[in-house]
Image (cartoon, rainbow, N blue to C red; front, side, top):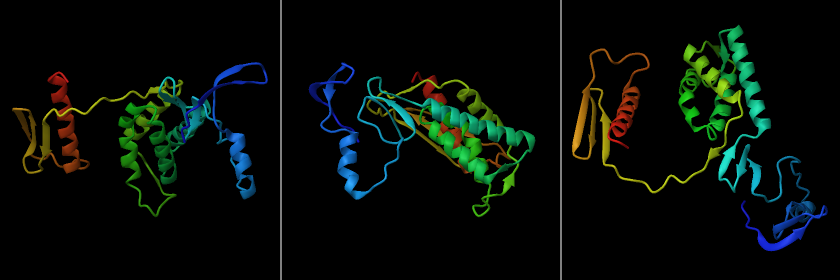
Length: 229
């Protein structure tokens, strides 16, 4: 919940002066809730401030940024250490560990957005397990371990804050793209167009309509880049 401060300085016990004050603070909330006997977590509550921890992230309202608290950063790095070490000794990973580290890194990707590109192999690996086999173990492809090592390298240093800047109004660039398993990929950009036919034998393990549509999106991005966007 966000609250705006009101005018009127507050003199602290150490002689410091705050330019603003809030109509109520955490202590008043606790006092109001005390008759209900609701237990409050000792570490998950804080007074209103411009810098605070919420949902596992450190938010800075002045600089409009979000970052990983150091405690969380070290916790996630240690978790990665343990899983990479386990897989290195035995080339198998449990479904439970795969889901756990996937959830953790998906959370961290909010602060490290480009990390999303290094989650797809792990996502695909978790989908190979039958849901009822939570303790099953399987051998991940080298690409999964490479992605985990990429995340480990990134988290070995304190990740910089993610700046929450407005993206600006949406723009209609008149770009259209589609994929067909019978023919290939077609693209239009304004009054220009391009097309790519698939070759015989393109279908195979890991290559289906989803793969072809992903290639279509990649070609769209490359086309936009070549057009100066």
